[in-house]
Image (cartoon, rainbow over all chains, first blue to last red):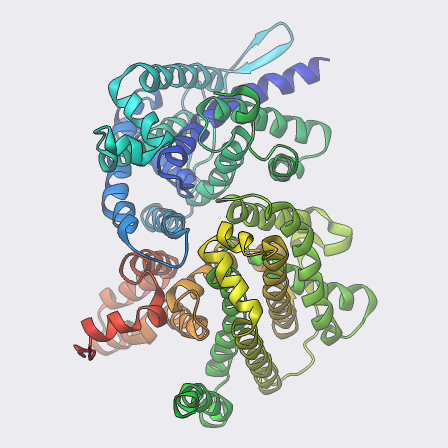
Length: 291
Length: 338
């Protein structure tokens, strides 16, 4: 029973961070109708920002959230403005031009980072990186627990922003019906730019929070991109609440897999869930929650 | 009649040039490059049938490539059957993998198919890593190549390439091809015209994956070694296949050939450090700056690849063949009449 609880706790803690990455992706999906296949790579960039801030300027990873998130917001804005928006007007045969573009962006980000930092493994080893505390028989990693609560705070803030502010309403309106939103006076081109920035900032948040726990290397982005789209599909494309459930489900499944099946299964389990969802619940958790 | 002849003229001249090429350039390195080029024409063409003509973009063509390669490799490895028999099974296995997959994903609209191919790619890669008794896991499979010279491989892959392109041409210009295009343009309209869209998407997937599987089996024969991270590589196979199709021009017969040429050229351009230009200057002038520059360029080949993706999508969204009119107008300043 302890093993089960321990696995569950580890899964939920990880899931909270996955939810953050998934939410960024699902926001972009909802507003622009594209899957951003550079999401993990954006996260990787923020990990490196955190690494540089920590190793050069000795800034604590949690403080560097204040730098990494705005930086990635700007990067996202730039990408959307310069690379993705121009594609909207272009007439092409293929429907997925923008998705391909994000693949290219992801590759370039990875390679630029590899160019600067080489492929070596780096780590942000803070005093709390390997600390744990106990509640009963269950151990909690300090870094992951703090990260989880920050992630929850950001998720709640994101909800408040989407539900209560004008900008948030405009984003939701654009996601629901772009043409109607334009007719109502929403500047949809600007909204897409802001959304991509927000999505990148959420990825940055996750990246910075994960930096003390994970080894950092240029290719870490790819696996996180695939995790993010599994979460997005699980939650139902474009559903923010769904992304949270999707993130938690993936986190729990990924920690149950190695405990009960074997280490090799950690990666494949997400994909298996993905296929099962495609077969039995194609619109994801969105169908169950109706939000 | 004349235009029909003219249309076939250039490809035939090009084919003739390819046929005599090994006798002119008596160097294995160039033969190797051309063999890879022709293999990529096959992969690109089969991707193109699915994406360019039927509108279903596959982000995980390595899944089918790898299945073909493993089909050929495993038969030899476990039963000692000649890997050339594996060629046939390679194509069939790739199609066998594709069918249930298509049956699940083609019912869904939007980005699901593209994402599902990506997932399939990862699943098969992990499965090949885990199933060690069968696939040897990360150690990979090593078989003895049949021929020591590259020449037989050269003509075998050339024949395969010609067959692939003929197959694509026949398919695209038949009723089947028109069904595919109608599905790409408007699935609802196609359905209301009485086209069973799921069935025709399956046919397109079947043809496309068959040739990719064959190319995979050829790769096994030619290289003599495979492991999961090589043949199921997301970047080097799946994304490269997309790039070949996009650069050349999706929805054109000869687009993938142009795209494959560009991709191989760019890859070698970087890998050899601009064909050794920097190294040459470095040796001449004796300055270390050129040597480091050369090393820099060599390590940047993946970066060049990524930048190529971005620029092509931004500037030539329909590819070199698809946007040929635009290129002629802009670059060569040729005014089209009318």
